[in-house]
Length: 441
Image 1: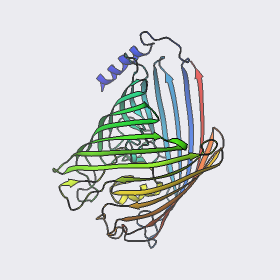
Image 2: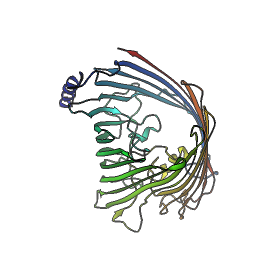
Image 3: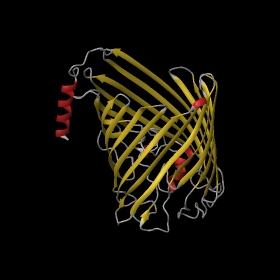
Image 4: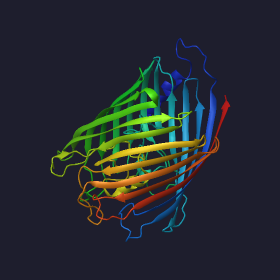
């Protein structure tokens, strides 16, 4: 750690001034800062067991506060730091209100120019999102939507329309790299200690087409769950390789597809052979292209119980966030874990209509399936492969640059994949206040 700090300090000193041969036509450096308060009221029922005979309704209010700032250390180096605190007040079933911990959401150096033109480096705790977040979005899924950080180093090289990034992550099971204030008992951010390294390539110079390709090597080690549990995962090491293609078509249409494969081994000798992907067609229309229609399919392979020496179940890497559903992300808790998108396929249709500039309404429908039944508790799981049907409605409203909010309603009607047939629902009201400022230095 001491060596890493010395190397980073040396690089900062070398990069603080203009790169050789570089003219100073940049905007003057500025100190920027921001504050955000998010309040969510959530109400759900039956989403874990789909059994109305059991009283498992939950009503809660979530208060999340964020503070952040960016301080320039020179024309080519910025320091970013952000604090985050979220407290949940459970109303049904009522629990005592307790102020939760204050943690570092971000703390990283952004070296925008290194010794070679086009070369940059970000090192430290940071948020990373690639593509649509299919494999790379959330490095700390265990804390819900409080934060999405990675402890990472990202070395990038960009020339014209081409960018290549080398990424390395270290995401331990609990937050041990930075201090926590008013620390509660250690919160589990992952079920295991995760490390990864890989390359991400982006090409935007093709006519009406964007191409992304990637390869990552992952280690998932030290699962703390009981070895006898169906959810327990022995140590595994595997490689994920994939690509994403976006193609703009005439008349406001666009086609998007992404496909990825996983190979590797799990402790005990089992081979990993998994795949996942999606494809959809999107049509935008309206005077501001504010409306759209969307139809497509998404699939994640599932583990075949008839092949004990092989694991076909997809590992979602860093894609365990509510991309598809806030409710169903939680429902997966009784399979492999919350947001563990695996053994799942769904057809999706979506329509977004914006009657006025500050408002939009989204209607989404999912027909959800599974490749194989899940051999879990028969009180919850059945013997079929039809997960069920899930319609969603979301209304967003942006009042001004400071205030915005939304209402989200999700309804799930379970199929033969579950042994019980009681519908589940999820309802959320959200309001966000944001303030940002900037001062030239």
